[in-house]
Length: 248
Image 1 (spheres, rainbow, N blue to C red):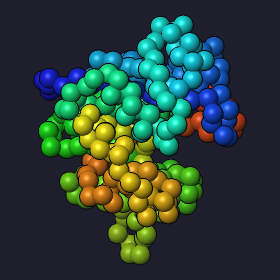
Image 2: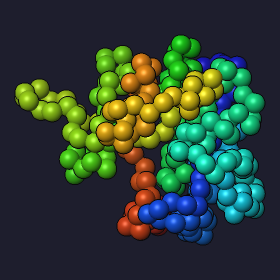
Image 3: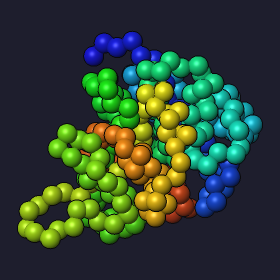
Image 4: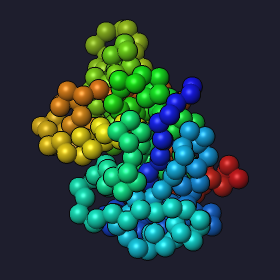
């Protein structure tokens, strides 16, 4: 589909992760985690620019050394969304340009996932925001660390939760869908999201995307088949290392 919007991918990354310190710089098969994510994102044909948004000079130095682009941000951000919003401002994007917020801890990111979420915004000029979902593995249906989503018939998210959605009260078989934490925004709407006040459901579930729904905005969901492994713990890191060795 032809379009005039600039489409940029921004990867928020910081050293001060609590569960896995210095996570973006951890070596995986000879390259830092942030380099793996950057290279996967660069392979998405729809992105004109890919940059790492970081408050840490150590990360910026590593990114420069592998040939990437970094954007320095403030330390005092409450979320990756706020960091991406600051970086988008630095780039001077137009209101209708598209920003993809790419998780910095998913080194097996699939470029096709980026293209799927961007395509939703390209297909509907009125849509402010989009994200991804995939079938939830049976082992994670009751896992609160695996976020679930249910959608309207038009694909807009109705609700996100850490509990099973929907509850199987009848024998009608509706698949449980897992939310995959990648977001695409109109550049103007990203600034709106960053300025929204926290909301009760967001704080109850500890899910930032609920803030968007509670304030009455739409998030349309694209379906992919599998979610990349997010690295939050040493066990996750070993799973990713093994998976990448197996892909070999």
